[in-house]
Picture 1 (spheres, rainbow, N blue to C red):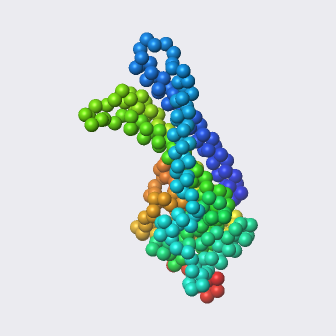
Picture 2 (picture 1 turned 180 degrees about the vertical axis):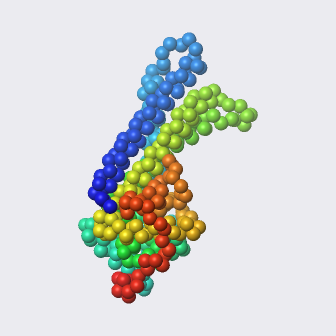
Picture 3 (picture 1 turned 90 degrees about the vertical axis):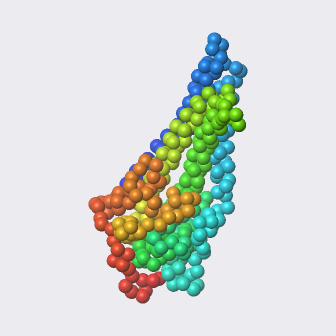
Length: 331
């Protein structure tokens, strides 16, 4: 795998997508102004011109909803990665009493030192039997890596290294912070749509008010903006997964580490073994829950990720195919 080439490609595509995201917000402002201008002409036939500050007020109110929604959503995520991890059922690792969790903590410390990062807090999703993990937190100071029980039981040390290296890359590259900010912006775009829905609602006498016409225009513009925002957020997330895969291969100097993890997940999925996760972390997982490629998916197709790592298609693996065979492999 030419990991430097893959990293630069993923970063370049992320920059393009973020530019498109900014253009989506600008386009939403223009669409709302155009919709309200058309509504004004329909409601006031024969009137020339617009009220004072018509477009300034429309623009200001649109941005207030978008940026206000972004602030509300991101504020609700304050409190660090540990708070989110505990919310979805994770607990802190117990290296003093469990050998497999000691191994996990050792790997996290080794890779963090090699990457010149602070060692993140390591947590375990005890009730999850599938192979998966996620990283959360605004920055390295409050970062958390949570690993499922299935990963601890089913992966070799090399594979755990690949898994942890992938999650450390998300922290190092600021992906956890970026995802939270994009989620807040999408929520702000959704508020415009919800405003239009509210303006179109019927009253207790089953009649719509005069606000229904401009509300319909705002609803249409808001829906298109929200849909575009969701699609772009998902596209950014997919590129960051490709970047984290390439960084994991760079960190570990082994494609069979992370590659083995993804192939074992493919084996689980082929055997019909899937697990559900809390919606708050689904977009942060090592492997998403989608079964096939979709433009709103937050993760690339698993087969494509494996192909990029190995340069060719590879079959899924059973969990026992690369299990540790030596006692010292635990540490």
